[in-house]
Length: 183
Ligand code: FE
Ligand code: ZN
Ligand code: FE
Image: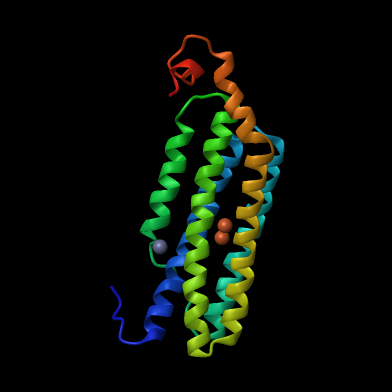
């Protein structure tokens, strides 16, 4: 563990953490994309994969702007979130239900990133790292847009399709409880 004597130390530490997190995403997201059924969802995730490559570039630039070596530090938080996504790849299920699960997992990723960038941006402001701040903000905006797009996809189509999936399975445990049983 690096020594956290100054806010700069903390900033550098967290910058390395998100750098590693983004690179972990680059490794796992292609596997998720392959498993997704909905065409629009696949396109949205592909687009965000491409954006993520640009985000890593921006982080390289942020390190450079502070004359720091661009080196990651293992992000256990992202590892856990992505592990859940990889676990999902082992499951078998109805296409729309699986897609709803993939969306939920991807939104966990986005929210983790948004909070990480939020803290980094706040510290960059205090520290006067204006170039890094601009780069971090650009990444944060993309994460927020990706999150909003996923919400839209879920709420406009995929959740409803997933909700209808139980209706076709009769007498199985996966079926939702019938109305009469709901009190
Ligand atoms: Fe990202
Ligand atoms: Zn982390
Ligand atoms: Fe993201």
